Image 1 (tube, one colour):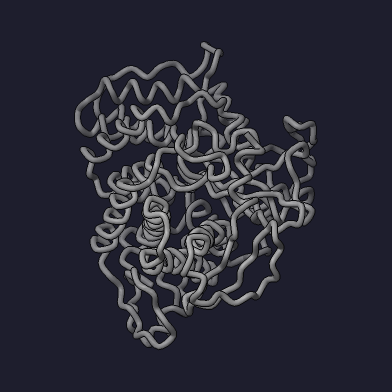
Image 2 (cartoon, rainbow, N blue to C red):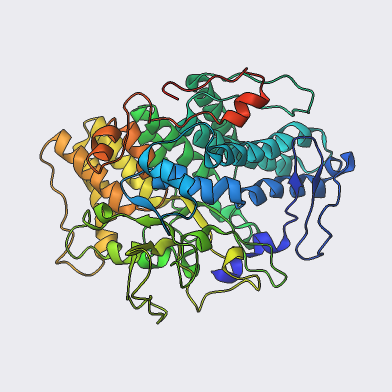
Length: 492
């Protein structure tokens, strides 16, 4: 699995195309110098189209897109995680943890910028690749890949800020500021992009080994199911998740404790994950693991599991040990965690074992893929949709499939859930989502869509304000750059 899952990055030209059309390129095998300008000729060949699409994937593992700010927005805000690290280190992250955010918080602006940089690269492909004389099937696929990733990035933005500027074409420095679209308009564009992608993307099994990790039909359907869930479109959620479950492309055969190891990357559990590689010359990884690794021993120690999450697991649930590192623990690779670590817990799903592939640049260039969408999530969405549509038997069957994988051969733990009432089954599904997907960047947004974020988070002492804290503030630098065209969210 390891040699296959990394080849996509090893052969890819991971170019960084900026909003202005300028940028730099880096081909890992050819080692072209950074800072090389991209000219219009870049979009005049099939090779250029592939390279431009690869640049979108490159953006996904960059610092502002899926590292510090992403962890703050999607995880530290939840009841599953806390800021972690030393109290005085990166103190601005405490504003996410405690819901004391202001529009000048640099993390909010980083998150905004990271998503829009990816969108800009996707727009390059969607607008400029159609004119290239090249294989038409490949052309359609590349555009589909770009649309799926653009949809995902807009999904992050709309969940975080509500309505945001809807930019689907190339922009230059002289273009007027784009005002905020409504949340409904953003969701409409997301759905259009995902449906377009579904129509042209191949299934996972159709890709060659060197392209494993690219956007697939199943991934696009999975994101559309999640987007539909956030809008309460339960019939769509059920239809899409049923199609994924019946596709034969995915299963729950990967043991839970293996999913987040190097051996579990791009497994039959995976619908979409950000690809990282420990290349001989470096430059193929991300800081995702370093930021979350044990402080004082491996990394920076941010985004640590909360005591409330520790208590959420049922007795004997092996997912707890596969998710949470404790002080003094002996890890599966034999490493002993220091007993005087600053924080009592750390995120094991971000752990890079000593026997896994390493970059010459260290953990800051980690080989760790970032899991964004996996099959257990699809099955739990299926359970929730079936329950909402009063199909209780299907809901219970899907829910228990996830629990069965978790318990493995140990029949003394995690017994099957039996149906009692619709509301009790909903609560059981929500609880299962929490422990199955813990530290995977869903919990805060789940609480918001479920309408109980304030109740849950205030009970833990967080300063969540109903009608305000469901959304983050629009970054002040973006408002200033727009000349006041962008408006602020209520309460900020």
